[in-house]
Image 1 (cartoon, rainbow, N blue to C red):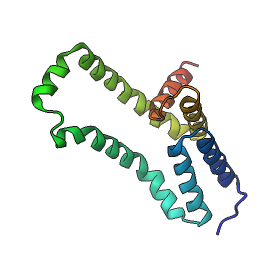
Image 2 (image 1 turned 90 degrees about the vertical axis):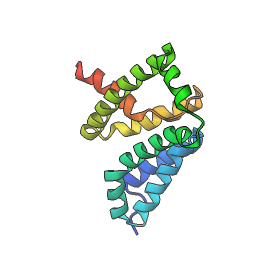
Image 3 (image 1 turned 120 degrees about the vertical axis):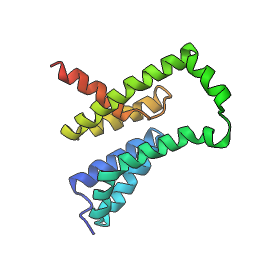
Image 4 (image 1 turned 90 degrees about the horizontal axis):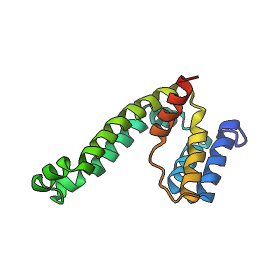
Length: 151
């Protein structure tokens, strides 16, 4: 069993408190999971998550987005006209932009992993004060990277 008062454990505990205080269950659950893994000295699990969790998360998001196709809720008859409407074109363009920002977000987080705490704090503030949902950490990191690149 690891030392409870180590710096990584304390940072995870702060994120857990921030998630709970900000009513952000996703951040709270992730921080708690990693804190438990850390306290139980499950380094292999932490390493596995570090390598594969983001890819698994992308997979789950795409899976959720494609579910209406599998259920028949979205049909070809509804899909093609939606793509031609202004909001469909705008959605496609914004998605293309967000993929670029997400790539830059991954790059900046690889170079500056300490930014994750600021992203988590921003997610908590955004959910508690602005009533948002925490879905854009890679895009937020990409925007931060764009700002940092101009310096």
